[in-house]
Image 1 (cartoon, protein in one colour):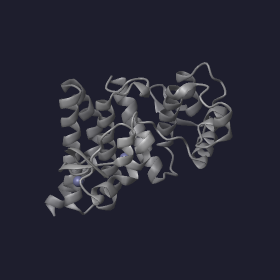
Image 2 (spheres, helix red, strand yellow):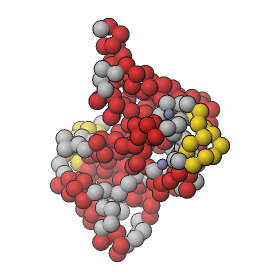
Image 3 (cartoon, protein in one colour):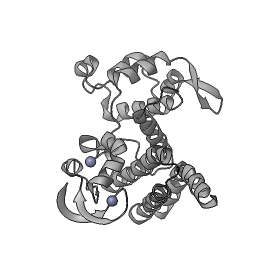
Image 4 (cartoon, helix red, strand yellow):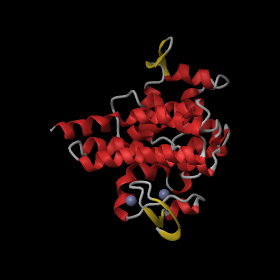
Length: 253
Ligand SMILES: [Zn+2]
Ligand SMILES: [Zn+2]
């Protein structure tokens, strides 16, 4: 962390001058007041730290994730309006010009040979949209890892906010304000997924989750638009229902 003009800690909201140095190099100021606050969010933030921070690029698949997606490619898993559909169906809806879905999934593995052969054949924007859809599909699988869990939840939020016009269709068009909003969402989802589950009896972490959510909405209102903040609230707040439950349990004890 390096000394810079200050901002609010992403985890606890305290005003601080400590920002994440790796994200700073990527052109975005994200603040953490202490090593402890940075550590609390690290499981989520690490996925979008440094080169993935601005614009916030979804990381490529790990080999086991790619294998899982390809094994489920034609199985009906996603619940659509017209009944369950497969990853492949979803793929065709969004990328009707590409019948080689399995090949494309192989190409989205970090460090894969396919990647080197065709470094950017379909472009960052296309790859990001494929990754977001695949992540949403993986969300319905039972072999969840913490990484998958967080990325799936974030993909779902990104997709909904894209449909609501809060985020741009092409991730490369993300403004600094939109990117910081996204990092707020990472913070909320991480606290909900990780702290919300492990510290069910911890009133302090439940309160921190609430405060984090309010700051996210406040940020959207101040830096994007009141309309956007309503959409953020409607799309991301349901993630906090776990916290309301926890708080009720504590209060009623
Ligand atoms: Zn803090
Ligand atoms: Zn960072």
